[in-house]
Image (cartoon, rainbow, N blue to C red; front, side, top):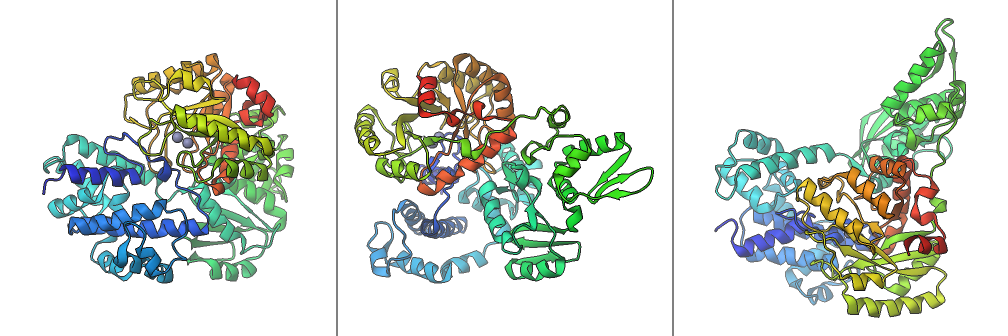
Length: 602
Ligand SMILES: [Zn+2]
Ligand SMILES: [Zn+2]
């Protein structure tokens, strides 16, 4: 069978979209990329869908009957989109759902009861895990894996790297030089990101870790505490003794890597957790040391040296007498060094040490100051909540406003809104606003097309209160073209915010090539805000660009890109990222009152 016959390549496109990747890098499935922060029940549907998808992929790698493969992937698609939890349905009701049928219904019941199904485990046992891992590379689908496996005996990412470097891939039919390069690039991205957690995943691990400690006796340190957009390991400092904590850790950990009196390392949910035991009187210096960053610690050590002291994780040692002074809190230590306390998010040696010395650190934006969410989808496009439910959710959060920013009709994947739909939606919004304390602002997330035009005519955009313009296609354009494309959206008088400005998906897709200096400059001139998309899978723009934007006087719009109730709470990740970018409350658009916001965007 030809590798790229129409049917197969369509199938491939569909699956890649599922991985948020398209063969041309041309389209992103928003629904999947946002990843979802599912509640327990929806997670079950998601898990069921993932397993069925994996089954389809494995069968395809094995070169099995194409109808069998499609049956599984189609069922997975349906389940992913299915509104209510499947776990509560019996076999008969499951079988009556389109695309599911008797056979898969039985497997779903098996998964609900046992977490997997036998046929999947059988197929899995015949394929090396390292081969399955290849599927996680951007642009690599089961067909590709199958070919690489059969033709070049590629069984792992390392194998693939070697074959690509030795230029043996290009000899295969349907593969070329470009393919080799793209494999190598995908491998680099994968290695950089694999093992790193999103903030959301890190929170899940941290929540489990907390149960091993008595409140008030510990602190999470490291990059987690500094609020980085992805986290490697979880570091914990505690004043509780090892003999108390270690047994508790043993009960919650999947694996104890190393257990001791001074430190213990465990694996929890596949992630490494390092616990450091500290004497209470040394807690401050230990916490400071383990929070980092390295660059920040080096700066503090230099300051200590210049004063005739030595700074280490146990305290500050007088170099002439050898006397060690201990610190229970970080504040005492900062004070000793004649510095204002530096919040963890700023500890990167980006100038904060100088500002702490000059006592002129910025007062960073706080989550409590956020008065609304600037990027929310409703069930009019691909969100789950209807307008009334959005208003209810906003009220519950104590928000003054939400921007309902559904997709424009041009986006192929999600059901987008055209002028007629927008008018109907406006009516519904008006009704909801009559009885809600949280005002729904009429907005749109309009596509920036490949040529820089927008997905809806100006006449339609002019009617809306807030317009977010985002790139959802053609990610692989050259830097200059992509930059000009976004610049033309910035120039449009109706556009208020540029959504997820670099298009990155953490661990999955690199930011597209773009000249951020020019974007920021024009955003400043036109009064366009840049979004900090708070989804833990995006956090876009990142801290570095926020800093740059803030320095130039460009406002940041924090939006959760919520598609479901549970995702509203990702606002905190956006706020943390803004704090890392030195943003104060006046730099952030959604700290404004409704009135001030509407004035700013009118
Ligand atoms: Zn978007
Ligand atoms: Zn969106």
